[in-house]
Image 1 (tube, one colour):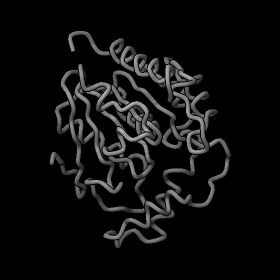
Image 2 (cartoon, helix red, strand yellow):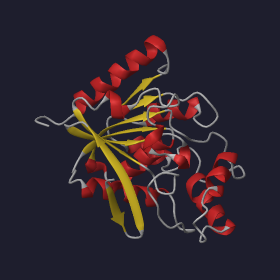
Image 3 (cartoon, one colour):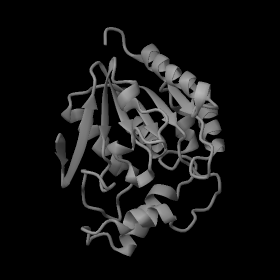
Image 4 (cartoon, helix red, strand yellow):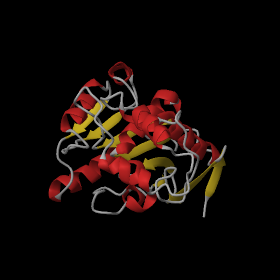
Length: 245
């Protein structure tokens, strides 16, 4: 079982195929684990679709119900995850990669680009999360279900969990970054539209409009549209893979 240590956290990852690296972030919110790839909720499975020609890296996010674990504090937030992601890249000796993320993976991608833009050749954001309403709602059922599974985390008191929830979701929009950052983010990006409450279409549209080097795909989850989106993702990464890689 390939794992790395970052401070007090253990991070589990798996690799598929060979070639220029693609770091992936599975959907399912805070329960983002490798096993979600390949489920119906992930119409495009990069571990399968891209493993011919690319070195695809998938990982269990910390405390997501998989094999990655770490302590939880009131100071944790998007940067906690980004440091995990960079630690995996460092451990694998990867200086630059593509990113593919669905759902919460969109916010993971944007924050990684914010902190280490030189590490990212291009990025695909599939139905990114975000909030259209200005105010932070009460803790969601999905968040509470995730929190209820933290049986071995005595440090995860209600006060800590409330702070963690605010750190992640209070900012609104795309959560991890603000509109000013997005408008100045030069990383080539492909946005696959969201279409439900957790992945609002207006967030996808605004991201695609604000990102200076973005392309946008409206329909991508079924039938001919899905086949076309799969081809578009492969073509997009091929276009932005550095020469000689």
